[in-house]
Length: 434
Image 1 (cartoon, one colour):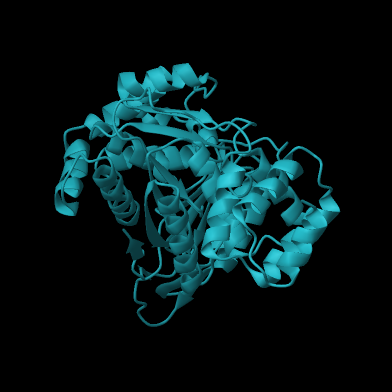
Image 2 (cartoon, rainbow, N blue to C red):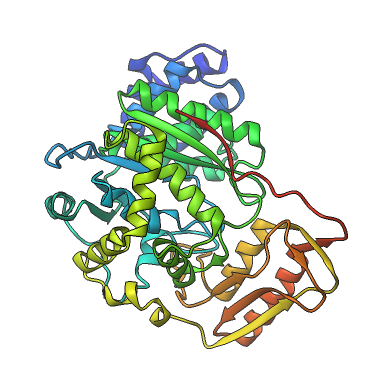
């Protein structure tokens, strides 16, 4: 088998077989196929696409290119959740304790963020001492003991995807549905969960700006997951404005804690309940959506979800007292408010720009080597559809650098738009694939 022949086959709009795809991925990962040939293949796929079977086989080949986590030693149905990312997306921080408190084991691999804020692991490090350094046996033992554990992704998890994504990133071949879906799902399948719930974002702050593209990606990933024998479901959620009110690592942790205390933002709680309902159903702990939702609300009301978060933080070396005293979480030394220039209604918040404000303040990474300031960020006071009066606070920005704080304030002023007439709020949940 020669890579040259496979490139020509795909160039001529022919389908690649399972054996051909596995040959290509195995030999590229091992270094036997050069980047220039794989670049040609990625471009051929970009223009000519892949059918459903090709996409499944590409995903499986990438998943099997490294370690496959075997979670069979964990009791029960293991359910994982993945978000395509967005501004203010701190969902895992509140969702996973809620689900674990319902008796569904959550064994999750997470990464660090590259962008406007940190990833789940970065945010959890707002608890001093928190660590994701553990081996697989410790990871599974913790899930069996308390129902939840989060560890960092290993370098041997889907190494073919890491190598391919780096190549696609510099050859303008990222934006292809089969390649996007196989990249995400290869890591999820390699992580070993029995069921996967996907949160696919759409809107100005999402990777998929258009709703139809978000639905297409969700459908593709669900098809892959089910083809691989995993119970896979998807929620398509709105990211045309930040999720909740907090943007920034420790600020988002506090908002997640507020939510577990029954005092969280309505949109954030709704997303947690929607995703959590799918996770509880997939974990066979409820027989209907109504029952699953009631279980999750009960875990908030009786405090067991909050206690589960504290138990989880303590198990991974963090200071669990901050779960109950969240005002002691890191907070920046300076703050400035952005106020409304006139009366009216908030018509639009440029989600990407709000995220960039956090990045300017130091809350995110521009490169993998960048250091994150966990204490900085934004707290919104008004969301789309809210009425405002001239001089009323739109957002408060927190920083440790005066120049960066001033720059972020000006940026947010331009990102928050006010119109004269009332504005209809968009529905948060755009659709589901169950």
